[in-house]
Length: 425
Image (cartoon, rainbow, N blue to C red):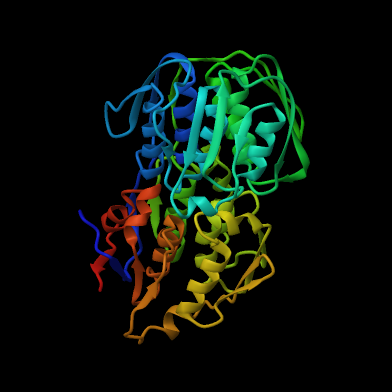
């Protein structure tokens, strides 16, 4: 499939999905590696990388700050830098790329002069106030009148020194942003959580591993604090692992169709937090009655759609942060599940409840009308609800192109497994 239509209907396959699929590179690791390579003196080679809307926006912003980024092939970046970012002539526009926006908000504090970090209308609704407050506590002139982008940072060429506390209850990306900028400080910087709450902690571990790959010296003092030395970064070559969030769609597709899909990488070999979803998917159709999604947040929409066909209802807890993703994913998933069958998905506080029905496919087999799934410009809503079409007739995904944010080949991948996709009005 080349140009995508405004809507796609999934034709439920009558056969198990069987084949070999190579998931794209990890978005989380690619955007970390691009930034760290840009902050390193020398030339770095990144292989197995993701080329998608989010990583393209990150690379474009870095190029505008004096970094040379070449793309030798479809999964590689060659990044050459002096180790210092230069002031761009205009605001940095980062669409709805949360990682790029938050990471660069901290990194541009090392620039001499004013930098504005901005995004699209959805990004302008996503909180960034805790990160701005942390920057200000380090003596960095940063402001965000709405506590969301745009953010104005007046850099002074370094990241300061001392101790900073960060409220990471809404997102672990705030912590990662501070950690990655800290090696460019004037002296050691201690980064500590304000309170015990943090978004998916495993992503901080990803950040620490990437930093060490580029020569940073960072010590974890305890579960809530880290000490970073002012080492700067050294150019490095990094092989990026496949995207675990993308893998969840394949694991779920396999479970829904009794298929066999070889990803070329074992679930245990992923270092990304969303890989924990594999153990839950493996229990289908007897998934647990309560699933804590706090440490595998991007996998929750996939798990929720799978739960619609479970033998017993499922409650998702620990997912408050999903309300401040590309869209309010708790509300979006509940709304779209209930578009399939009223009451299939409901909200209770910040919990998501799926009223599972293992006979759902049989009960809806004769339905001829299309179920048009609103995607809210959210790639994860589009890709996860497409999975419902593997068992239900008439599932139609609006704005399928939004999957390009992290998985540009998603629809081609389904077709490669034998799933028929038809344009819909």
